[in-house]
Length: 346
Image (tube, rainbow, N blue to C red):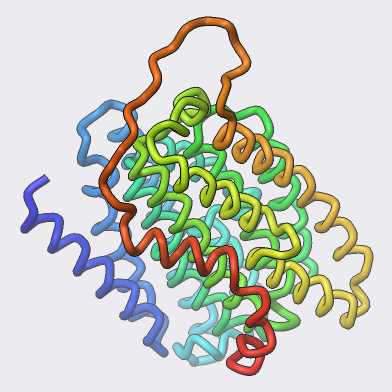
C-alpha cells in the first residue's frame, strides 16, 4: 500500500477515535464512528485476497447497521426528551437500542458472528487495530451512558460472551480466530461490571489492549498465523517465544501476572453488589478460555513437535527484538504488584 495513503488512513483513525471520545453530542459521536469505519476498511482489504475483501465487506455491513441503530436510538431519545447530550440517554427504549448497537460495534454476543471472520481475513497489524483502537470509541460511549443502561441485559450478554468466547475458541487452529474469541470473552468481563463500576471496565480494557498488542506484535514479528507454524517457530527467537508464553498466560488471567488484576477487581466488585452467582459463573466460564490459552502457550514453547514426520527447522533471527514489544511484554507480565498505585489513579 502507498505510504501516503496509509498515513492518511492512520490519521483518520486517530481523528475518528478522538472525535467520538471527546464529543458530547450524539451526531458528533456518530460521525467519529463513521470516520473510523471508513478509515479501517482499506487497511483490512489491502492484500486484495478474496478473504480480505470478504472481511472488509462483512465489516462494512455490520458497522453500517450498528451506526444506523445508534443514530436511531439517539434520535428516539431526542424526540422523547429533547436532549442530544450523550450523558442524557434517559429513555428506556433508546437505551436498549443503544446497547444493541454498541454490542454490534464491539462484537458482544449475540452480535459477535462478524468478528472472528473479519479478524481472520485481516493482516495481523490490522487485526491489532480492530482489537484495540477500534473498540475504544464504543466502550467510551458505554462508559458515558452507563447509568441509564439495563443491568440485567448487560449481565446476560456478558455471561453469554464469556461462554461463547471460551467455547468457540476451543476448536480453532487459526491464531487470529483464537484471539478474536479471546477478545469476545474479555468483552464479557468488561460488560458485566459496566453498570456497577464503569472505571473498572476502562481499566480492564486498557490492560487487555496492552496484553493483546504484545501478543499481536510478537506474532507479527515471527510471521506466525497458524498453530502448526507456531510449533516450529521456537528456533526463530527462543527468548521472544518464552516471553510470549508468559504474555498468553497473563491474557488468560493467571495470578502472578497483570491479567489477574482486572479479573480480581471485577469479582470483588460483583461480590460487593450481591452478584456472587454471576461472579461464580463468569469465573468458571473463563476456564474455557484458559484451556485454549494453555494450548497456545504449549504450542509456543514446544521444542519437539508431537509427530514423527521430518520438518525444516526455521532460521534463528539475529535482529534485536523491537523495543515496543519488549516494553509491552514487560508491562503485560509485571504490573500486578503495582495494583495499589493503579487503583489510586482510577
